Every structure is written in structure tokens, then in C-alpha cells.
Length: 418
Ligand code: CMC
Image (tube, rainbow, N blue to C red; front, side):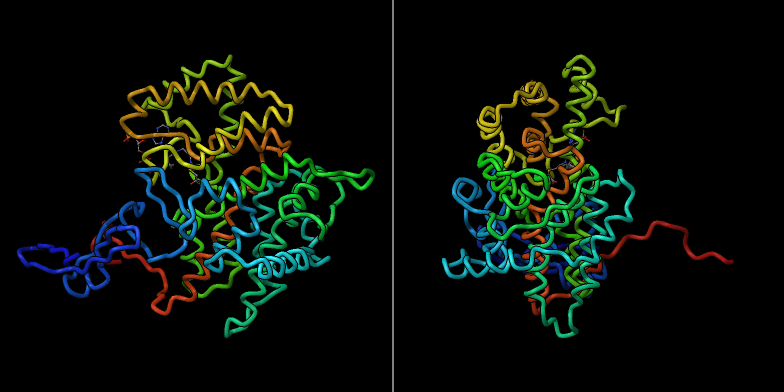
């Protein structure tokens, strides 16, 4: 494709065009300021490509999501979370030997240093598990510092993936005052996490297969989503050559917000609020449309998807099946369905292309699995880890990588005397 032409103040400039492997077109403005003196202005970065990446492809208009070229529907139907971690981080599906070795490494490194248990004691009993997760992941950098030449980076990637599930489960045990359950090497990644969450020392606990499979699916669906708010944060922090743990804990902070990963907790709280208020969901749809109210339908809308979020489609299809297998009936699911129906038929939502996103159905499933509401965003973080790691690694290995440093248009006072 030929260059783009820009006319600014009567002068014409040519800007090179970059085309991605799926035909996505980007105007390369890296020389724009040097040549024209101007910058681009794009609050919220809705039109800004911050990098070229070979990890995840999304076509939001058509509702397509692919990891390393594989459609999410196929990965969700047949993949195991650990293979998807390998795929995202290293670029291809592992051979059986590579998978065995990777699995072995992930179990071998799943214990956390005993001293770290003391950190958990320091948090107040009602500490939000996201606060605990964020602090604990960042504190891993004090146990496993990165050498100046980046040596040990691969091992730290393994340590992070392996220990995060232990930390996440310990943060839950701490919040309910139960003893920590240590990781087990004979269980799968999701199975081990569920065992650490739900086992108690006094009893044998066998993780039900339906829970293990459902968590495997949920983790895969959350594993990466290209340059979203938390991933961009991970890249932003990592671009200053901050270590892996510092970069990922910054991403966890970004994920926590209710407009991003925190939405899954907010969806359930919203559904609960509607139920407690007599299940009058239409009232809340009306409120979400009212420009004088700051209420939004949590779990609806997406910056990139202007069609059904393919992850929500998969989860919606699974939720009935899983709920009946687990033997749970949930009145909140009925409200969710009603809300979705009304919103999909309402001009406000149709005109703005607001569809249910992944967070709309994930909360229903987590709830059915017995995972408490304040752990939902931790579950999202656990799933998103391989994506953050893959994006961090890709950025670090890019020879043209530069520190992220956007510009601004200054609108304050002009120079005045002090
Ligand atoms: N309920 C009611 N109105 C909405 C909603 C909603 N959930 N989302 C967007 N709108 C309206 C918004 O008011 C605006 O209307 P208008 O054009 O009249 O001003 C229009 O739709 C466009 O919204 P926007 O805020 O400019 O869109 P955005 O791309 O900046 O925000 C979003 C995307 C996901 C933050 C937003 O849709 C939202 O707040 N949704 C609820 C929170 C949520 O579910 N977040 C999870 C996102 S998916 C998983 C993840 O990334 O973590």
C-alpha cells in the first residue's frame, strides 16, 4: 500500500503505511514530529497502535479473537491452559516433550518462599485479594532479582506462572482465616489452584472434574487480549526495563479497575442489587441510558468489539451446561438473561454497538463454582498472566524497542512571573 498524504498548514507530507498479516492498516507516524513539528492527539489511544505484535489478533467488527493464529473457539474447545501459556509465550504449540518439561517446571516452582507467608499475616483480614496479589507479585522481585544482562529471565517467567496460583489461593485462605494448603505436583494447573482454594487439612478433597474443566476454559478465554489497559501498562512499565515482577504487578493494578477486569465483580454486585430491588431490570436499563446518571450496565460494551465478544458467546453457551452439571440454580442468571435480551433490543445499545463482554458471564460461572465475588478479578489476573508475560517478553526482545513516552498538548497557563 502506498504512503498516506498529510496536508498541514499548506505543506504536504508523505507518511509510510504498515500493513499487518491480517490486513490491518497503520499510518506510521514515527517521524511525524521531526518532519512537521506536530504530534497526533488521541485521548484513550482508540486509534493508536503502540507496537507491532505477533501474539493476538482481534477483529472487533466481526468478533474474531485468535492467539498466535488459532481461533479462540478451537482453543477453548480442546486446549489445556498450560499449553496455551506455552503457545502465547513461546509462539507455537509445545511438542509432547516440551509440554512435559514445561509442566514439570511449573509444578517444581509452585511453592513460595516460606518467609513470604509472613507477608500474608500483615494484611488486614478483610484485605481485597487483588491488593494482596499485587503486593505479593511485586515482592517476588526481592526474592528473584533479575541480573543486569537479563539472565534468569526465562526462569522468572516460570516462577511467576507457577507461584501466582499459590499466592492467589493463599490470599483467599488468608481472607477466610483458614490454613494455607500447599500446591500439589500431581494436579493440573486449574486443578491444583482449586485444591488450594477449597481443600481443608482435616478432609480429603477431590476437585470435581466439572470445576477443573470450567476453570481451564475460563483461564484460556482470559489468557490474552492484545493491547488492552493492563497489557499496555505492563509494556509501559517494562519499556523502562523494569523487571518482570514489577511490570506485571503494575498490570494487576490496571486490571483491578471496574472498567477493566474489576467489571466481573461489579457485574455480580449489579445483578445482586437488581434482585434485591425486586428484579426490576428494566429500571436499570433505563438508568444506564440516562445521561444524568453515571450508572452503566456492567459487563456491557467494549472498546474493540462492536459485535458479540466471542469469549462471552462461549461462556454464555457453557453457563447453562455447567450450572446444571454443578447442580446450581442461580436467580442472578435469569436476571442476566433478561438484561441481555432487553439491552440487545434497545436502540441505545444497538446504536452504540454495546454487547455483553467476557465479564458479563464469567462472574456467573465463578459464583457457581463457589469462588467468592472478591476473588473474581484475581481469577482474571491468573488467566491473563501468560498474555502479560508474552507481551512483556516480545517487547523486551524487540531490537527497535524504545521507552514508552507519549507526548501531550499543553493547555495550561503560558509563562508568567513568580
Ligand atoms: N452502559 C451504558 N452505556 C454505555 C456502556 C455501558 N456499559 N458502555 C458504553 N456506553 C455508552 C457511553 O455512555 C457512550 O455513549 P455516548 O456516545 O452517548 O456518550 C458510548 O456507549 C461509548 O462508550 P465509551 O465510554 O466511549 O466507550 P469506551 O470504549 O471508552 O469504553 C468500556 C469501553 C468497556 C470501558 C465501557 O463500555 C464500559 O464502561 N463498560 C462497562 C464496564 C465493563 O463491562 N468493562 C469490561 C470490559 S471487557 C473486559 C476487560 O477489558 O476487562
